[in-house]
Length: 406
Image 1 (cartoon, rainbow, N blue to C red):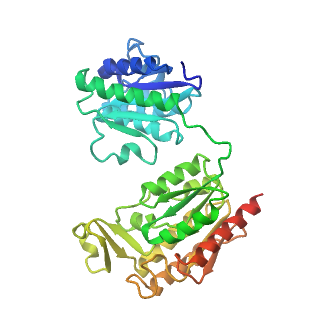
Image 2: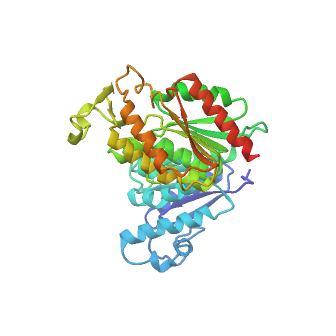
Image 3: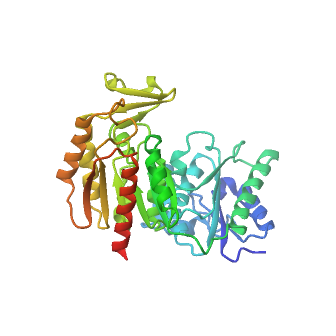
């Protein structure tokens, strides 16, 4: 059959996983998909691995040359080969998909390159590490991580089945891609949390006739995923109305964004409407998981596994300065909407987190530190973030920004 659109790249360290690598290659080839093999061994093999791309070829992509990889220090060699492979894979115009297999070192070698690829390119990683915390391997990417069950250390009745399933998974994703509709609408990124759900639902309902509304759960990885799409130029705009991940980043919460939050927005220049959704709370796990230094704070026990902590005046000042510094780097059109009636469902008159003093600390600090221009500005609105009038204002503001782009 052949893919006609490119190759599946099968990747492993062939010095220890050669039999498995070539087994996966053969399984993929039998489906009719075109496949190439890559050897990421951290020792030179002079082409003896039998892979289409031996380790010397990949190591040459390191900015400091192959010597940076074949350095004799295993830890440094793994880091260097991971970088070299990331550069190699990102520059393959014939890449249709990638499948990797490995243990802890192999997974660390392969997944950074997968994470760097655009969302939508099929990525399958068969790993011994897939049964634990995989956030470091997956990041904000659409990597399919498959637990190897047995170690990736030879072929047996279990490994043949698992590796064969993975091979057919990647081949199927490459050979039978979903058709793109000619009626596809431009995509928007929206951020939502449980306590801002009414707002985002109303905004999505108002815009869905003209846009494909992609809603991201503001759980740290959600913001990362949205920014990845923005950085890949897959989004036409953002309604980043729930920025609560910043609370967790600055104050020890469990749903923290990375320090790079808002950087993709600045780099892409796409029109953005932003707000302070759920900046009234820091997220922790069960009550016993809250750091002792916060023992005397105001909490709301959302459920047995989620404990919310109200942010203070001082914390709101710190958040406002952090966000202002980030947004001052944005050259695109940015409107920051302030819901004076509260930042979440819990931050409203009569609710447990209602604190005009804390909210006002954020508002006045942001106004003092954000450099406002004709393209970057703040608007105060006398509503709670979940009031219909706020959602309507956010939609109007976004449409105004996009009309100015035309």
